[in-house]
Length: 473
Image (tube, rainbow, N blue to C red; front, side, top):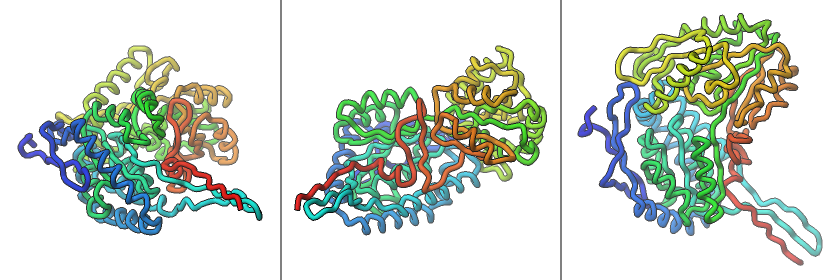
């Protein structure tokens, strides 16, 4: 597709479609060609979006709770009806197979409905003849949301829904690599919400920096890399912005000596390789008891050989391309570096010929803790497997990370596994699954994996401040 044929989506500010003089190319990773040209928001346009959100907040925060919930549910239903359009946009800009793109939209609306099942009602803290004390949740104001390129629709909905449900307004910026489906979400929002409640702008790194320092934004909700999260935290200090930071992870999985390797192979495989390994809470480091190490390796390779890699619009494809050239080159470099340092490629899958950004499924053994493939988050289809003899060692290795998003233990005895899983230094500790999320279950990490949580009641509360109403009778 040439630049003249490419899609040209609009930004959405104060209920209006907005175009820009400057644009950003959006590359289809399956073809390495320009698929769309997205607006590159200027600083003055960001100011307009924030001003519109501030003005809308005055009215929106005063809308009765029941009406806000009604409109949010109407929006979710409208997004659901648009599944096929959104899924096609996702496959083109992100690369994932079309059925999995449909699943992302379905997951986004499923989690969104979960938020609408929660209401932050006032809580009576004290009631006596002389005093009445009540705790309330109040909206913060304008939310600045910045999302990543691995799950554009899901992450956008994780931020739009709790923001507006609690009475806030929002200015949302998607990744410049995958802005198109998110801009479509913004377009749908204008059909449901009053002008200025949901504003969606697109642009590069400068736009994100302007948002984090903007005095009119009261909270930043960010999903992305650790270094960027640290810069956001420093920049947000200027006006003490609230923060929710989901910064990725280098999750470990411990496979105990009583597993049925053949039975668990598929789940272990997809724990890592779902979405071409581009999952913050993927199982990236696997520690396997030596007694079952050979069997687990054999079954994983056996299952991996059944997986088809290719363009997301091609029927029967299980895994699409990596999303962008920078990530493609980084993952390639990590694999080459590990092999140069002594790692063994246990398995590497074939990939389609052509210009697309297709990376092979790669399983590495004989790895060392110091290797970048082990010590750092590899955001791509690369899994390292290390044998262990003692569970104490496996637990220590699993916890030896700057990250702490998720972790898992695998066993034929869930109760036994749960004892070990509870000792993992992470936000989500899972048994015989990885990752595992639900709309009522908080999701977030510790250490370098972020601050705060999303989903559930706790996730909704992140978009509010507590006010104590204290009455002397």
